[in-house]
Image 1 (tube, helix red, strand yellow):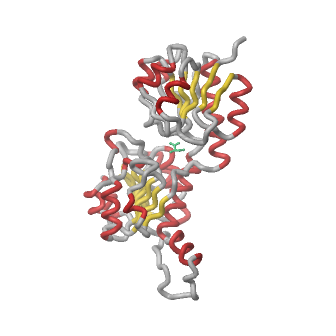
Image 2: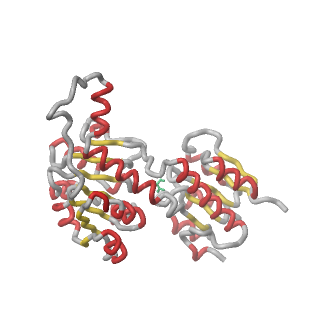
Image 3: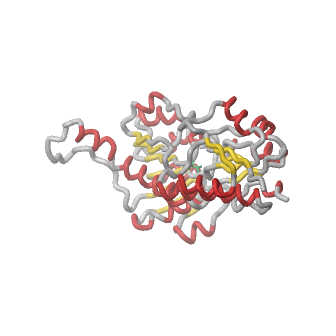
Length: 325
Ligand code: DGY
């Protein structure tokens, strides 16, 4: 029997590729770069399934190019703001994502950013490597305490919940803001639901864990920075456009907030040039899920979604299940 024909838009960890190859005829983008639009449109044509990335914009035109035989676009990410799911549904194409397997890694990286920003780890490392360290100093590179402080969590889904649960060892008071109360989050973390304004005013560390959608675009902007403590730190591992990057630069430069730890940017991979000048910002290149184990598991989930779709089964983490069947 003819094997399904699958396109993979960029090389993934080998175990995922091996599993896909066992059951399908596959073609993989041979270059370690994002496909140009024209290449993407050409490469998806006539495929039964496509394994795509958060850096691929998948919209009406792409689904039309893929053709009516195409069953699924499996996104290699938990976030799927790069995919027009309504258009996929119109084309009767399923869309899946990779939840759960990256929750710990992403929450761990939010903590990494929190520690690194509060304790000025990157600045201190550079200081030493630059040969500036001449001996212990009482005022050298002073940072902020973490233990016992107030943690503000905006968005309490899987990652926000996991991040907050990890605060236990630091005896932190937890405030949270979400579109509705989250009793499970409260039970696990002792978190208290407050409005966004209260959270911003009272938290020492504010960490954002919301999906990107029209209502969360620039959720943190000029007014929000004004509300925050001068000693506050902002952490963003969600999506760049959730934070107004120009307003953030102003807040960092004027001392309106103390620091920021970011893994995502408004116009990725571009970064606001002035942000690069801010020593009180720790800037990472969107690596929150970037561990060997997690990226492998993300690949395996994406492949399992494809294999299920090819077998007429419900893909385990399908987003638009109404298309199935
Ligand atoms: C996601 O999965 O949405 C992350 O941003 C990348 O792993």
